[in-house]
Length: 460
Image 1 (cartoon, helix red, strand yellow):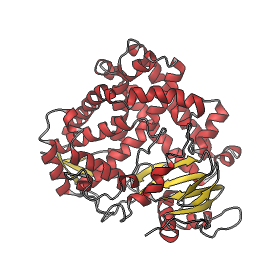
Image 2 (spheres, one colour; image 1 turned 90 degrees about the horizontal axis):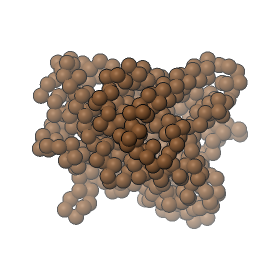
Image 3 (cartoon, one colour; image 1 turned 60 degrees about the vertical axis):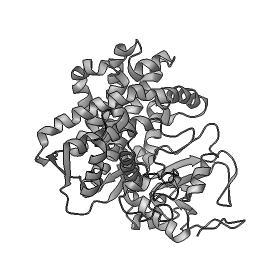
Image 4 (cartoon, one colour; image 1 turned 90 degrees about the vertical axis):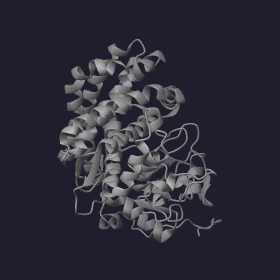
């Protein structure tokens, strides 16, 4: 077992001047495999180590107790790593962005309002019906695919994810306006998909260098982000007049006194973030269920017993399926924070300003926290009569939405839409995996399958 170190130098791999261990990362598969490289280092060096990859010096943590404690050290204004290409884009084009890019008092002020609207219990009164409606619509469309393979699963889930967010934003107006908005939403879903593909290409070369040399990888990124932000901004401006009397999340944001320009940039970033994260999380969950027919049938038994979406999202096995999918395939396999003050991590002194990276991929697959860690076992998240998990030693080893003041603002929307959609899928279809070859997790800004996931649907 790991023991707390006292006045001992933090473990660190041997690197080269200027580039640190970058060459070792490249040999391990480069940026798409960085989660496996860091996992390998944890196995070599332990749950806490320090590494320098290129120009980035960071402390990596995979110990659940220390991960949980880090969020108590994040300070009043937590700060995290921002993707270099996006930061450079914002600087070059004077672009003000949403919550993810805000810091300091501006972030805190907006975050408090958004907490009230998205994370308090009464927020579910509007979120749940919106998610249920879009889940039902998706399954209805997929009825035409029964008896064959789903076409373009990834693209369909992108569209579904944007539809959910639009339904939450518009409230009752969604049903009235959705056909009119459909062309804009469809086009935006295609562009958002491309944004993350272009962003990922810049993980292999510094964005500033790519911009200075006018490389196509940078110009393509700029062009795609221009299109995505323009499309998101136009969509928000189009629906704002529909919500001025308090309809949906958008109307409530205006009622809370958030200025219209801030509403537009906050919502535009929510749209961009939602497309990628929930689409891939749902795709991974479908993959695991399709690959595990027994788990699928057990989930069917549970969801058949419910009569309302409000009951459905409380089902313990359904929640276990989601938590298990996010444990095995965390959409963000690393969480980041900059320390606002000197601290100790696992007994090692760490200076103010140090970047600390939480290795969720490693901790989520650690046998000390999850017996048989590579096994898809939703029942491990069920609790016994004493409230203890069946086979989870520490839930803090899997924190896909983070914790603390800067945890994911869209958590309730994401959890609700994924669970209600999975429940509708399992009720209506038997899902079978067509892929015969192995599917690996790779990083493309977020965790994505190494090849398209192919699902065959059969009507129940």
